[in-house]
Length: 499
Image 1: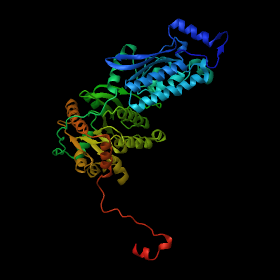
Image 2: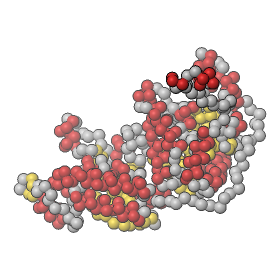
Image 3: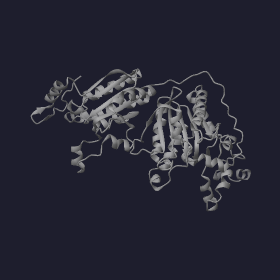
């Protein structure tokens, strides 16, 4: 394929046809993109590579069509698609015909999503305009090369429109603001892309021999008080969710940002393996800059991970470790309550196995937003509460002096919650987690493998129905529901007397 001149464009003495012929002679290419099939670290993939030498890597009709056809090939053959971008944007010389290629390529990327075929994009220098604002920003994982220029408009247009000679768009700026996942040196792209393609290539539901039922009985009492358990859950040396994720899962690739301008470090989201099996992990970190109190962007980042798990039918594992969600003015303005609610809704209907683990302190709705799933585990010295004991004391007694007393009444330990049938399994800590973090990680890894094996036998429809039933049948009700109806106005009298 090669471009025509759909709008008969000519700038100065050189027509668009002459510009095309010159670019073809200089590059040996028919247009600005090369597509094909390849193997990356042993994984079959479809590749799309832009060449900036050809009219600035701009996207016209040929580029748009080749990209769309490559996406179609990846979808039909269920092969991961890798796109290496280097483009100034839509091709001016083809006018609105070029602009419409944004819609064409974006629809192709959307169909990849629908079919659970991974799209990995690499933003080389520069990646701008219509390419960046279409399929390049729809990658399941987005990488960039160091110092690559990444922005909606180039420096000359930016200066004219804004009056600022230096546009903000760099790879480092994008990473800081959560719109890309990682900055990768060129020599490291091959192993990184191969690893991601292997993890995210389409997976079928695993069916293994049904294992023996995991041991669900609660642990014997330790003799410690409830408040001592609270202190152990909050111990500064206790491994956080992020720490445990690094110890339990192999070959983890961390995702960054909510794709909306922020990257909350209180959440770690990533793709890794559990005894060779690809999984998606979301872990909270109470040692983050905000003390583990997640902002709306943290929950949006978690929701990105939920979507990846569902799209590629990978088990999702969440590690809960937070005193609660952020509640300051900035968090309220950013929609923290909506972000928590959306996380609850997404997890409740996620079409893939979900295992939740409370590993430290589980504080209120900010923790529950990662605790809706098929199995809920707690470490022996973890706690999970409707509200922190200190806050409960402040509400009920107008001071924090009754926190120790209320801790026992809130029934927040793993044993308490197992007894209430809210927790499915208690994982032993022998010794306490902060004293032997590697031992703790080993115990939790074993429990996770057993739980996932038990869920392998369950189809998606059954998972969803059991998950809903689990939360519909939470205990605590007394008496019966009664339906009281007011009789119609013209049927008073006898009906009213019977009521």
